Amino acid sequence: MFKKLIAMGLLALSMNVFALTQKVGVNGMVCAFCAQGIEKSIKLLPETNDVYVNLEEHFVVVDTKTTEGIADTKLKTIIVESGYDVTGIEVIRESIADLRVKYEKK
Image (cartoon, rainbow, N blue to C red; front, side, top):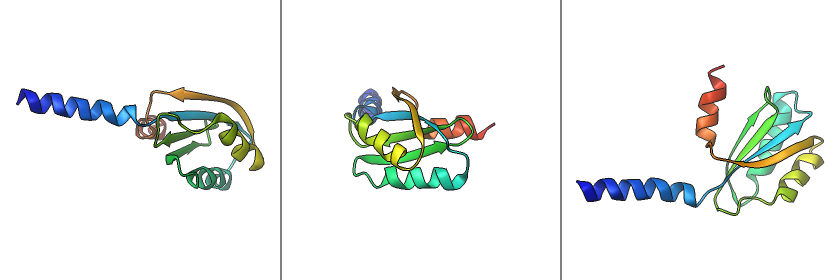
């Protein structure tokens, strides 16, 4: 039983070790069409696992498949070329699943 608990704990930790979550502040997103365009563009990147766009709070969150994440310059280029301004990019600890729960409750 104890070995099973340790194995489950290590598995849970290893899931976070191999992924990175990046939050990008975006100015200019005002409609679902805007959000959909950004989401589609970022999902095309091979290192992307999932994308969450929040129009009300003006941010995009990207879960990546690696610990390196996606280069800030690459994310910024995609968003700027889509017609929006990037206000900041940061690595966060929350997962997309956590953020969906947090912001969709409102």
